[in-house]
Image 1 (cartoon, one colour):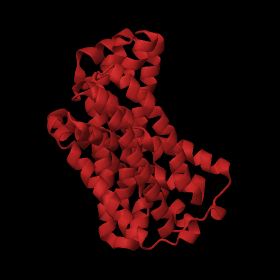
Image 2 (cartoon, rainbow, N blue to C red):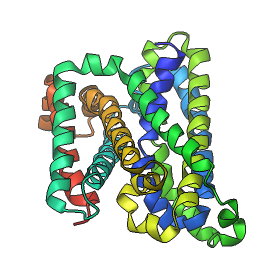
Image 3 (cartoon, rainbow, N blue to C red):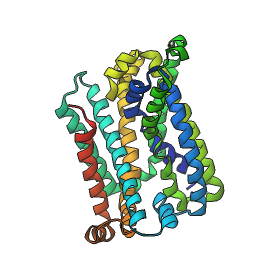
Image 4 (cartoon, rainbow, N blue to C red):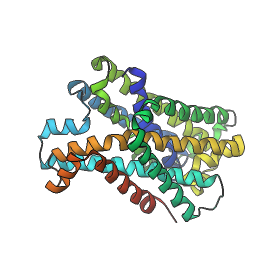
Length: 333
């Protein structure tokens, strides 16, 4: 894998977070949301330094699992931490699919009918699970195209919205107290989770010592800029009250005045592509990832044996938990 292929993995893992997080970020940080995105991005950038050094020192497909095993040994402690990491990916993935359900529903009606939203979420999860099970290799080869299309849609959103910005509405005097901005930043950090997926590609990277640090830093810096601009345009197009009211599909609400129904369709496509690329990175790797966790002896012997011996079970377990969390944890009926 060359620079751009690995870069697409990192950016693809991060960019999907903007769809479910932007509305909540504005609710917490209000007009200080761009600063909150910058603060969270700075924390992510500092974290990438550790990941860049560790990925060069231990270039393997295990990523964070390997780092923890190297530091603490293959035992209960490292196994527990790895299990928590796996669950964090499941929560992130379920959040992406929940966002897709909200954006998909916004195509048809402003009222959030729970039945159709649950149907969209469940269909998307089961569909992408089937694709990963039957033709994951083809999806993997299309990762760069998927990332390119959704980035193109977001860049179009930024370009269309910049011309309608009223910069005076974003002056620091309109910002909430700093503690609200910091609270928003801590939630927003979830939108940057995904850059560590680069570590899982380290074994297949050409010249990892030079390529990996450049991928980490450039990917996170690019996403910081993208997120800050998206937040600025969203706040420049819609009042805070309307963004909060449409929290689950805020970008679809923001793009409607700019491009009408076509814009909503494009944003929904981007949300689906984000869920697809996230599932491609998480579901496809879940069998190997869960197997390595099991070998860390962080699970019961029977559960560990099932994960190690049948790789598809890791996929089904991840998908099943994602299905439950996306439908009953993130959704608001």
